[in-house]
Each structure stands twice: as structure tokens, then as C-alpha cells.
Image 1 (tube, rainbow, N blue to C red):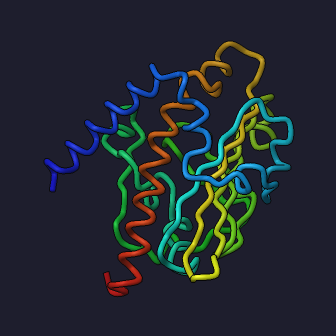
Image 2 (image 1 turned 135 degrees about the vertical axis):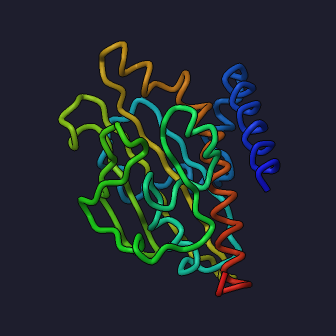
Length: 218
């Protein structure tokens, strides 16, 4: 299991390097898995970062209803259920992430205003919308810290006619005017790295939710 995890994270690192170089694939990365309608849709939380510098819309189909997907979203965060992505890579920069492959009852309640940390030493994101089985939106920067930069990280659940779920992830960024803000929140570095991490996250949420439907006790 540990060898598999190490190998998985090494592949993740390789994909990050590839995408950092492959600037021409930016459009594909920013719309991975999403339909034209999902990309163009105005979604709850978009208004929190109205004048975005850049953003993305990712999506994946999960063969389970929203009720099976939501609990995995509800417990995300550093010191909570993790982010279901490449935790070894996250921990190289001190995130102290431990991804859970089980549901954690103590982290199932999220309310507007609750903090969700990405890193133990960084200002947390704050829950702006928490509508079970529908939407989780996290906001960072202005208006949380009063900075000129702002970020939105949102997850939307749409049940389809055949009982599956479209999980749509949306990110929106307003980059501040300083050089440090452009480096930290601009698309040059953040966009390719966050894409690789987000894609892994969505794939793992799909796996975990579908597994829960087949093996409810797991």
C-alpha cells in the first residue's frame, strides 16, 4: 500500500512538471470534464469574486446520488478529512494532510463562517455557502482578510435523471496588485499545479462515493 501511494504521488509530481511546461494545454485544464453548459453557467458563489482575473470549471460524473457524495465534501480540510489528492506532495510543503478513506462523523457539520484550512500556518478559507447535497463554497482573501486578492473554491452537486451526480468544481481568483500576489495566486504556477491536484481529488471522491454506495459499512 505504501509503495502504491509513493508511486501515485511520484506520478502526480510528474504530471505537475508536464503541465507547468505545457502552457498550450491551459484551456483543456481549466475546463476538464465540464460541459459547455456547465462552463458557462452562473453558479452560487460566483458573486463572491465577481471581477475574477482567472478561473476554472472542472466536473466529473459519479455513479451515486448527491447524498453519497456530500459527506466526503463536508469533511474536507487540513486537520479534517484531507483533500483526497496527493498528500505526500502536499506534506512536502508542510500541509500536514492526512486523507481519510472513511467518513468522519465529527466533521460532517459545516456552517457558514466555519474555517477550512489548506495549511496549518496559512489563513483558512471560510465557508460562504453550505447547502447539504447541493453546494459548498469556500472563500479566501477579501473579504475574509481584507486583502485586495480573493479566491473562491466551490463544489456543486447536480443529480441527473438517471440518479447519478454531476460534481462541478469551480475556482475563481482575483489576483492582488503586488508581485507576491501575482506569483501566489496568478495562473502561471497555481493553475497547472491546482489542476493536477483537483483532478486527483475529483477522481478519488468519485471512487469513495461509489464504494460507499456498494459497501455502506466501509
